[in-house]
Length: 395
Image 1 (cartoon, rainbow, N blue to C red):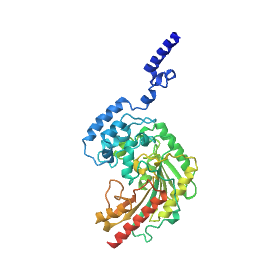
Image 2: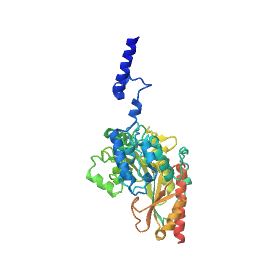
Image 3: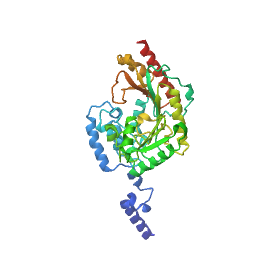
């Protein structure tokens, strides 16, 4: 008996010294710290976090990262790691390097929203108009597209309309932690599904890798070709292995566009000239439904809705936007801001984020994507655009 006890004690000591992924068959699971260690960020990452956070703490910034990454929250999260291997550094690296960020945090994988909830929850609540940690995003309800109004029947103000949604494939990380092989796997799955689209949705998929100059120039001329990300995405490591696994799809009428592995695994965009919001929305619903029937499985959180790389796109992921001429409101920016705020609209310059208005033309879109259905988001946006046009006409 004593000999067995001695052998058992020796085994415990060996397991304790060699355990961490090496002699796991010898572990006493009730005593072993393997799991705890495996869920911790490497010490080198923790040191890097401490160094960068120290600099960030003394750097002026209006970002939501600066607002909510207090020392207490930082200390709580700095050792954590998701099962995909993502650390807090993967989440906040862009915001640390770019204090002029609006948000400053990206989810490196689907688990990041849970593992780093102490940071993401207040950011989400702040950006998404009070979507609290106890709130639950409703099930999808695309509603009846025909019930949406035409935004500008006379064609005097709305230049073009587009509605897009973003999707992430189940069981894959997001850009910062994806391997080259995963980029290619996702491209194979998405391009295969897109090639099944028929009728007015039928089109071609063009991989960016190896694209000839003639095709590249044509896509640039059509304003379809997305480029490698800006400094915010670059520093978030959203452009790994560029251009591997990236590509563009569009249909014959150039009214349906898909981006593969740009910022999210899939961006599906319906668009056309003028203000027929109903037609644009209906096309998106049809295309997404057909892709889902091709066995594409999308990552959806029970509380947050559809998951995306950037927390601003969570929930419905819907961004409905118009290019609209508002020259009189352009001369009264306070009134433009007031009306936009009532209807939760985001007003950008002519060329989108970080640009200025040209000739009184703005890119106006819905800001709310969480806590409401897809159809409700479209209605709110449509009503807001109608009110902006009404105000323009009364000035």
